[in-house]
Length: 250
Image: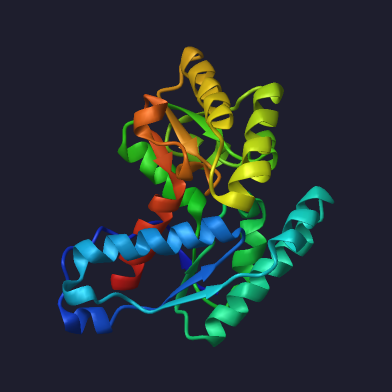
């Protein structure tokens, strides 16, 4: 099966002919807000790079997230992988030539998914670790689901680039988990109180010496950014969108 090592070089403005030759991008959705935000960000990037409203073809497959979430709760990561592989197979059937998964947590089983994928898959782990390195970060706080944080999803890819992964404590992890699954996933928004609680976690991590945060749940960039975090906040969805567009146009 095909593999993509990471983001291809950024592309400049392309002609109509080059646009027509771009590969079809497949989006294997996990949560609806994460999938929609990824597609929206690819579209906005295209506005800067393609003339006259042109853009590559896209295909989106969005299974029932409740099934995937239950499998995560049950620690049945084989079922999580099966769901994503099913999406990738349907995307390939729809003409996708490469794919992204706009969700961090499911990358716990990315090796299994890649081994069974019929099309090349861009890993969010490589893309985000490269984005942290590009911004010169050395100690990055990982904000994500409890699985992403507790199972140290980003430890290896960051360490390979000389970056230390920092993880919030258990109480802070509960705050982030609740924000994601009680507000951000169902509504795409966070209450003022929840946003304040998330920013308290960021401040605590800054006090411990982090020089940046990775918004390692694709819903977190809906409410957190460089401005309100006060340190570089890596938008994992945007990094993935940039990599997908670059690879499609390579």
